[in-house]
Length: 229
Image (cartoon, rainbow, N blue to C red):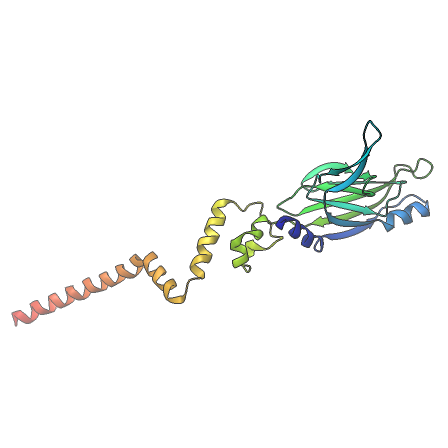
């Protein structure tokens, strides 16, 4: 549930940059390509009605397959939409789902930003078939699962607790170090001082010992001189 809420917030942050590469002269197709928008949505379970072998209708739940989907609207049967991402150079073709009435590409959770290049082609066999009509650069921010932790709720100002922080390199060792550092910072001033004294006692004690030895020697030499007079 926490992940779902976080993904919903990420929807607001996703970035789109359109580009036009139209050689086709079919104004209707070009306009249709220009009207396509991308909606970043959480993927959800949905209900369908199926008919069994006896002709009886019943409800069935189709479980979600992805963390989120990129939904391309409005749907146009004369356009083909494909996408490449920076994390995987394979071209993925958007699929139209008759039940939910959406043309979409799905993705699992990713912990570093994912940049898509969306390609819109004509698939009208009578006009500009196979021609590229438009490209769109679209960025989905990273999802930082660590941001949902108790530590991050108590320390929201820590950089690594940002929801869109690139956490792909955030391992257990780094997290432990973060927690220890923050724990010391959150101590009251007196306790923090005592903690530092306990941690760096040798840096304080050694100079004091050296100074004490120096003056002890000086005093000893002085007393010897005085005793000879």
